[in-house]
Image (cartoon, rainbow, N blue to C red; front, side, top):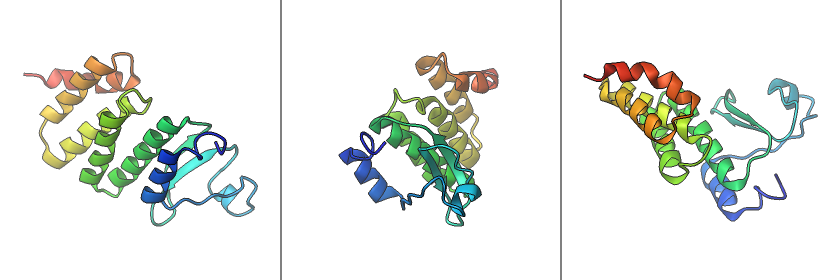
Amino acid sequence: MDAVAYIDAEVIGFINNTLIPLRLAAADPVLGPRYRVKWTPTLLILDAEGVEQYRTLGFYPPQELISSLLLGIGKARFNQPDRPAAGDCFSDIISRYPASPQAPEAVYLHGVSRYIETHDVTNLIAIYDQLAAGYPDSIWLTRADPYRLLKA
């Protein structure tokens, strides 16, 4: 990733402005086993206590790396729970990276975040509708299928 993604100016800016990056060798005798790093690149999003919230394995091109990191940040915020901040991350993926592999999951989690905050079932219905319209082959549409039954 050093040759492609990590030299991209947008990736550098995103990481420097959004995360506290830490690079370690997979063979690190303490942190390697603690975080079960078996292959590189392994990217982890950790919370303030060092608890893993999200993991990716393997190379990402620059634009997909940013959307993947945004998904991880959103999941970490969802788990805190800071659903509005999580929703902002998911919304950012949907609007800025709609063709990314992370976009369908972001649609799903954005709707769930909004539902948890509002208890308004239209947010669940919107998950199904948005996935059916934009990502009909996504596993996330299958997971959202019960929400279509909420339509009046």
